[in-house]
Length: 307
Image (tube, rainbow, N blue to C red; front, side, top):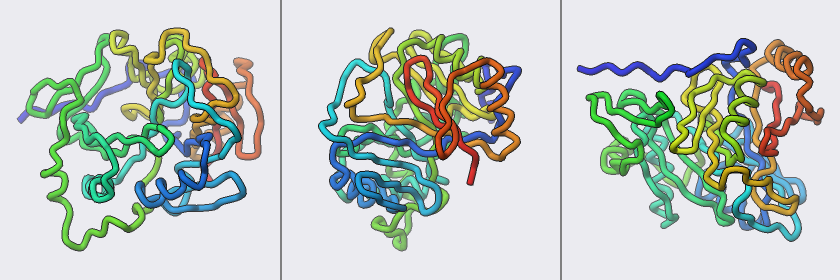
């Protein structure tokens, strides 16, 4: 039997960010909050944590996974940087099966895909924000970037492009008659990763890896995509230039990304990051939750300490 080694970082920064740093929530600017809220509750199964005027937060019952802010006269722009998708992580195949079954029951368009090391589906919210729902499946194989190329391989040695149709019959076999599709997602559900549109792969790598200390998980130059993470995870932040090399940031009235957030595990990890940021004189702004920075493509990242 073939045994595959879990992919390792291409490089670990000397000033490595704490390995237990993880994604928090995505904050989206939306045109119609009252249209979006039923989608995130009924279709995705998230709980409404709070609502205050034109803002709301949703999740699995504890931390927010998605925050929404309605803006006036918002527009959707193409050819700009921002969010490609955000990915919600389910604890196992059974819970992902429940989520996908819910989508089919509601006739919501989605695209089940087998990335080999993860099982996933993709869908859009009512305003076109792309969402990935996934669970880990490293027992089936791996995907990684090696020598500038993205590849995937099954545990039996077969190669793959990592975008195979998902075997729904096998996935749904984990469900039982007692599984209700209309119940909210379980509390173990959390944000898994973010994938950003950027203007330059190497500048983005330098910002997240060289400056902030995320592990470099590789750049697939031909695929025009790169990945970084904390603690050697396959990716917490993916980035691509699919909107074009040198793509500009969106105007202030753009719908879509307001910011992503990353959560440090404790005060010591927070202090270490802050010392690093001040040492290299990286511009940042203090906010109530923590600090915000802009990457080279003007995507906003909020860093905070775990509650």
